[in-house]
Length: 181
Image (tube, rainbow, N blue to C red; front, side, top):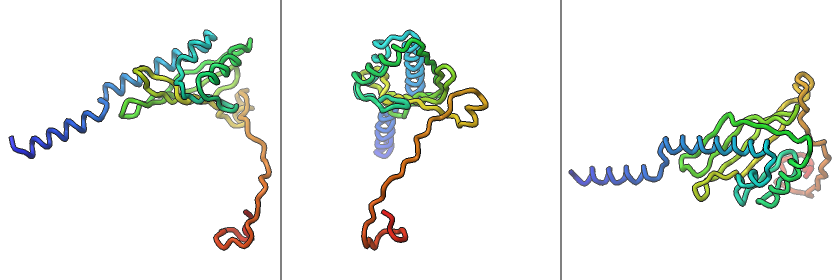
């Protein structure tokens, strides 16, 4: 065995050791899918404690409202939602992916709350051997026309707001005529 063969063998082993095998990625994707479904089941059971257990300590969550960060904020958010007598929320992951390191992944799919529906995204991080939700968000996805046709709630849009511009006097680098800002 010559030195080139030995070097190639060492480099190949070193490169392979830095990658997660396809089987490990597939296993991670299955675990994220299970966690996503179990999280949806916790919502159906209206269990705040079970829900919060799925989140990373640094998690950010929020949909159609100011986002909350950390377990205390997430607990307060879910306590408020689940405390509403008519609250109903279901979802199902359509797609799950994990990056090659096996440390981050995401699940995305569709949610439904009564007549409202739309997509969601949860970014998961593997921490201490468990998959935890790091970022959790959902939004309405349909146009007003689709809402009228299907009876679903329309997409909420922010009202137009006039943003005052402060002119910069005599700025030679401003690309706009009369430099409006």
